[in-house]
Image: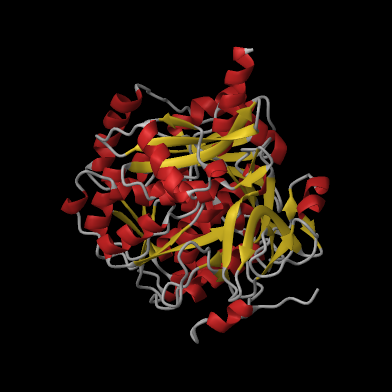
Length: 562
C-alpha cells in the first residue's frame, strides 16, 4: 500500500521523523537515570522526596524478595495501588524480577478483581491495606499465592505519617489490621530488611511482555493488552522527542493521571524515569488539592484529560492559585473542547494541545505540536516512526483527504496482541496495522480529526450523526460545564439524539434555551431531542466519560417500562 505522509512537512527541525530505539528493558532506563542523576528527586509525595538512587535500590530489593517467593520470568503480578511511591517501586521491582505487571484499578469491585486475576492468572499482588479485605474475599477463587500490602503513611513525611491513620479511619470508617503470614507480606517490612541477591533475568525487549493493560471494558469484558518492553520504551522516547524544549533532569511532572492506566504510566512515570524528571504524585483527583499542588510544587508538565482541565477552570477559587509554572500539557483520553484549550492556556500561559491514543498503542499515536503549527479541533499528526491512514467505510480502500473512515495506525508502540485472545487479536491487527475503531479523516495537509467511535455513531432516521460534533457545539454554550451525547432507542427513528448535561455551579439551564442554541448551529436531524441534567457524569479512572454506561441505563429503563 502506497502511503502518503504529508504530515512530515510540518515537523519542526527539532523532531526527527524516525527515531532509533535501543533494545533495552524498562528497568534499564531506571538504572541509567539513577547512575546519571542519583540525587535528583524522582518522586515527591505530599512533601516526602525519594531520590533516583533510592528508587532504584528499593525496586531491586523488592525484585529480590519476589524472586525469593518464587517469581520466575513471565509470572504475572497485579499492582492495585493509587499513585504513590510504592506503586513506582513495585512496577520496576516486578519487571526487574522478570515478571509481567498486571495493571489493576484500585476502584475495582470484588467481581472485577476476580475476573482480572483469573484472566491474567496472576500469582502475586501488591495492594493497599484499605483494599486488602476486598482482595481477601476473592483470593481463594483465583491463583493468587502472595499478597504484599502497602500503607500510604509509610512514605509520608513527619508528622503526616503519624496523623494519616487517624484521618484515614475517620474518612473511611475502616480499621484494617494486617497479620503477616507465609502468603501475606508487609511492604514496609520488606524495605527494612537487608537486600537479598537479585538474579538477573534475561529479557528480550522486543518480544517479552512487560505489561498487561486491561481495556476499559465499556463494550463487554475487559481484554488484557500485551505491551512489550519495546512498545512502552518506544512510545516514551517518542514523547521525549515531541517535547524537545524540556530540559533533561530538570522538569517536574504532575502525576495526577493514574499509573494503573497506560496513559499516566507512559506520559508521567516512564517519561520521568527516562528523562530524570521529578514526578509529583497525587493519589486521586480533587480539584482543590490539585490547584494547591500546582501552586506549591510548581510542576512544569501536566498531562491530563479534558474533564480534569474543565474541573480546574470551573473551580470557584481558581484565581487564588498560581498556575504559571505549567508550560506544557498534552490532553488525551477524550476530545478536548476548543473553548477549554483556550481558557486553560490563558490561565497558565503554557501550551495545552490535544493528542490521541489507545491502550493498544502504549498509548499515544498522534498529537498537535506544542511549539509548532497546531490545528484546533484536530488530534494533530502521527508521532515519529508512526504511520496512520483512514480506511474508507464505503470502499474499504485508503480514503481520500477529507473522506471519513476508520483510523488505522502502525508503529513500534502497537501491542503484541490481546492476552489469551488470538481471534480478537486477529480482528484488530492486520498486516501490522491496528484497526482503532475510531472514525475520522485526514485533511490535505496530513492533520487528523476524530469524528467519533465507530460504535458510538448514531443512526437516526437513516442519518449518520457523530456525537462529538454535537458535543462541540453544546460546549460553546457558556452555562455548560460538561456534556456527552449518545444515541438512545427510539421507536420511530431507530435511535434519537440525547444530551446529558452538567451545568456550571449555581447555574440553571432549561431545555428550551439549549434547543434554541442547538438549532442555530446544527442541522435539524442532529439537534438533541432529549436533554437530561445531571450533577456529574460516569467516568473512567482517566476521566473518559462512559457513554456506554449511559446507553445501558437507557436500555434498562426501556426494558423496565415494558
